[in-house]
Image (cartoon, rainbow, N blue to C red; front, side, top):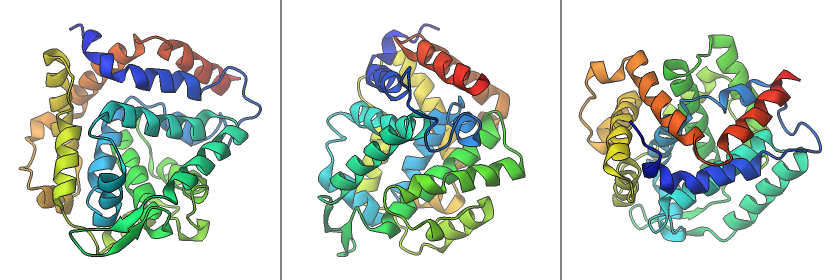
Amino acid sequence: MNLTPGLSPFEPLAKAYERAVTEHPKDDGLFGPKSIVWRVHRDHSFPIAGMRSLMVQALHPLAMAGVAQHSSWRKDPFGRLAATSSYVLTTTYGDTESALAAAAWVRKIHTHVRGVDTETGLPYAAEDPALLLWVHAAMVESIVTMVRRYGRGLDGGEADRYVAEMVPFAEIVGVPASDVPSTVSALSDYIESVELRRITPAARDAIAVVLDPPDLDPGFRELWHELGQVTIGTLPEWAREMYGFPATAPELLEREPVRQLLGVLDLAFESLPGVLETRRRIELRMRA
């Protein structure tokens, strides 16, 4: 299956990947080559971890309102994906100066993202630590879930270590470190404790685009749809019920078939300019 032509929307992501991982960093950054964060963030399950993360994040109406009212994601969803991915990659693999500069830019943007959610009537501000914590927790919990199920795997100690190492990721955008869960159990407890979880028209609209993005050729669209079904099947039951998705057939969630799908996607992504060279730079630093 030749998916390279269908990956053209992902070319901005490949360019962001190349820019974020520089050849000559000033230092090892916030985490460093020996961290579990470095290992986890290069896992091939990351595409569906990102998709799942977005689906959970969208179920906080105030977080979703900020995106819907202040973002142009519908006009350029892959550009938005590239921008978000660039931030994650820079804060993961970039030197400390680059990581903190990226976080400062995000905090600056957040000061302008505020308003009133039309569904709940509640005010929101993107710089609110409570909203930032929700976004962080949904992302970290999704990554742990997907790497455990379809990636290289994480035992209990490794998963807790990853969650703990990611505390600074939330702290640099404005969440007090003391508020950030540092174990898998604490992370799950926090997510379950958030009462303001509901489906809104904005969330349905956003996730419809995530599951069926524009500008994909038929071959790649079929693969993306299959991965979307896998992602739905891994959602917490409360989240799947909010969206109204039927349960995914168990055979579609089996580890090896899903890993094969991810392998096809990853091989095609690696064929894009700059991706293989960037991965080699990361690998060399991890081995040094």
